[in-house]
Length: 513
Image 1 (tube, rainbow, N blue to C red):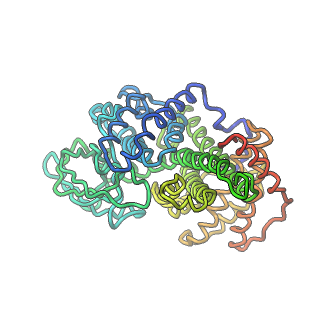
Image 2: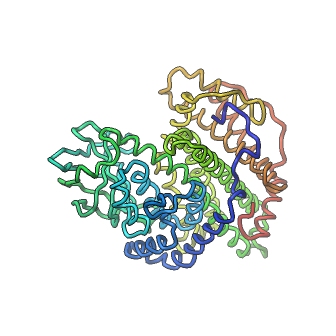
Image 3: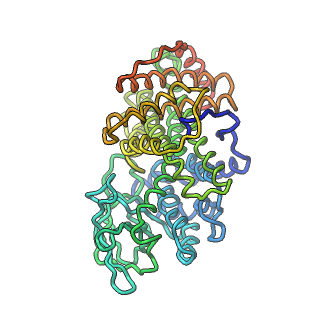
């Protein structure tokens, strides 16, 4: 548990530690996105799902759908770092990333981890190739965060279960072939089922959304849908294990995808800032614009540091012989931290991108407007950020503590644990939210600091110092809300450091940390 120990830089995985094979796979993914997907953006935004399916088939041909599927079922069986690196590269086009990500992660992984050999043999090869598209169906009109309050029912009828109910906000809902649907057997046993469209699933209309215009989001109507008993996924009454474990994986991988989107927004804003002339000079030469670009780059660096650290820790634990699901569950706090931090930092980056574009940022004819809208969903799906903020202190309270921190951020770590231990009523969400924010900032600062120490130069160390200065102020603010006096700290010249970072970003014309 990261709050109860110290770390050395050589212990953590960083983005710079990606192998040549992983980098090559990422290059293949990026080339696919830029040459095959982005040129067809208008068709995708028009909701021509035949184009999305065609592109998913091409992604299957390039092995992009096979990463998490075991080799014996037509997949590659690669590690989580490789899978998340693909996610980073598809993040440049959030609508298509949503379609592909929903298929490969929450759509396919329930079957990978909980399916029987017969179920895997029947479906995984077709999911790996893109012949079949998958969707995950948990949310209902009356149950979002409170997933176990689902009203969809499954009634045994001979060698079938009959499903009745409705699901809501289903990504790929308009064209998916295989659905992981959660329903209550006998009105109380929350259970997962593998349901083919041909069994009687009916899609509702495409939901008009704020963003992700090029992804399918529909309701599902289930009226006397007959599902073979053999299509029960996992154990009757243990659907919560399927749902929550897969959501943990989704949160784990969402971090890199969010940062892929953030870096793309930064790159476009930098390009625009260098071209846009006002008062006889490029706006990228003005101090306030430079500060924005620098802070956007800092957020990208810190987010990458957190995400790849967690992914590396997870892969290392799995390679050491740990059960995949138990291992990922043991990193539930870090998964939630990544989900919250990267989604909120993506929101910051795209908002600043709109500001760099000025009035043009408000126009649908420029990319900042769409990036702004597309980013909003990331704070809602895979568990709202409020739910994830509650998960963090709740799981920290239960976590085994194998030591005490004495090094970097020792004061902040020990203070956070002491405050957490003093909470008498774990239903006080306002207090838990502040504790979560304290833990999030610790993980962010530590991850970026260790990465810069291991692989960074002066520019990266500037980025970390600037972030730490601001983050520790936020940490102190949260502590004060809980009645704890802030700790006096030496000040760092963040203005000068941001100027150095801005020089580098503008000079490169893109993210370069």
